[in-house]
Length: 111
Length: 114
Image 1 (tube, rainbow over the protein chains, first blue to last red):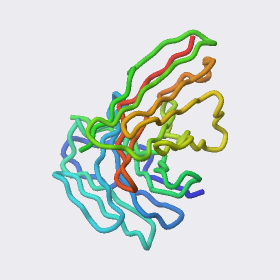
Image 2 (image 1 turned 90 degrees about the horizontal axis):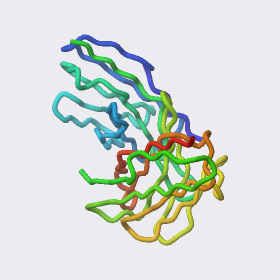
Image 3 (image 1 turned 90 degrees about the vertical axis):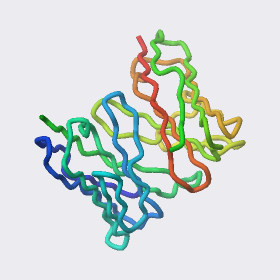
């Protein structure tokens, strides 16, 4: 099946710093989503981005489908950005399609 | 964004008993619902995919007789963990989708089997 690799696995930042998280996938995909999992376990949808670039406040994402990677940019990080960031790609399964997750990047932002 | 709810948010049960978890899409109709499992410090693992009105399709290694999934309507799916054992303790998360669109996740249910 498709492999989804995220890097780095862990990231420690001072408040105000910028960061780039990377997601590589092993096969072509129809779609890709980025999530932030908060300390209570809730997955928050950040971007639904099969290709191109999208921006939402201090966050932006770029997917280059032909080269099988996506990047998540966080600018001027805040302590509330801490948590785990997951990349997930839409892959075929026996029932149709489903999101397959990478292992995540754990971000810690200190004040 | 779309809202998916889960109930209960946490449950403790004794070994050998069964537990039912409900997942509802509150403001959209979900043609497909999914159940994931997450162990501490790990990623989400897909357990099963459920299309409304059809039997669930389970991922390899997931026991369909232990994890019973029902998707009876476009807004409700249930996961029943039968004869639960301590190794079934985990964080169970459902998600929902309309067609091939964006997938939305519930807040999760933390199951502890004693």
